[in-house]
Length: 424
Image (cartoon, rainbow, N blue to C red; front, side, top):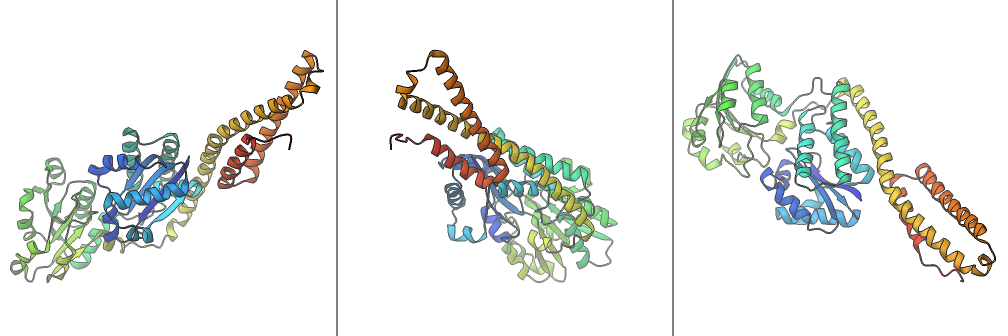
């Protein structure tokens, strides 16, 4: 088995593309079931967040597996492969493992040190495991990745001073409404991002009046943040009463469209409205930007505000990378054993067959031996076979990369199981 990941993230594609390949929670079960129909796929975990979509699979063949995963993404989302291929990355074996470890540790995040990704990796794995879609390879690598994420966060200061999308949204609003100590905020959605946004706005504005709506209700959150809860159907009317509208839901399409805001255009004249869309797929029609005094920001627009200068945290990043390197070696030792031992077993069986064939070929000689001598010869040949196995294992671990080890092991297995005509 080989670990393979096919992914798209904020480095390779903007939100317009990422939203097209996003896997919403309601379709995860269907997606995993679909993956099992491909012959090369023996297990899967799908990680789908605002900034990345990654399909991790245990595959029997890397090339076939990569083709199958790309075809799966194309078929499931009804997208031409020509759209997917230019923006995806493919990593297998060693590279795939290290990549996952960096993702879980937030080293591959747009905001290095952000804490949400660790929980997202854990949730993606648990859902896949509970659904029966993982196997021993995926279980081991994801459990290790989750442990690394915790270790990096607890033993380094990589998260100190890091910003979040929610805090950046507040910064953006403060730039538009300079010197304001009060703000009227409409939150649509009651998930983690909305909760974080509410907390940051209340910290940064002396008077923050929050209206909250959610399709399935949000009484508990409204009580926690001291917000006015309104009916979901009244969200458009509420836009007139609030300068900032933040949307963060799992809706698969726009829930605030241009034509609806067009109908309010006369009432909004001279009043700036900031629409912040923290959803993937997007929930706010970007065409609203064309309406006077209306400003729409997507999650990518927010992310562009991130200060990528990591000078203060470079030492912590180095510490985290060293941890990943050390734990990666422990993982690969385990992986090597899982891979090598079955092959060594196959080689040993091949050597037994070769021994029997050799004894039969030299039957005129062995017939002259008494029972004790025959037994001694068997012990000698078995010891010789064991010595061969040990020499192979030592040299594989000492002289090969993981990829070379896999290739050489397969060649050796085939070499010791070929039917050879000893008389030629």
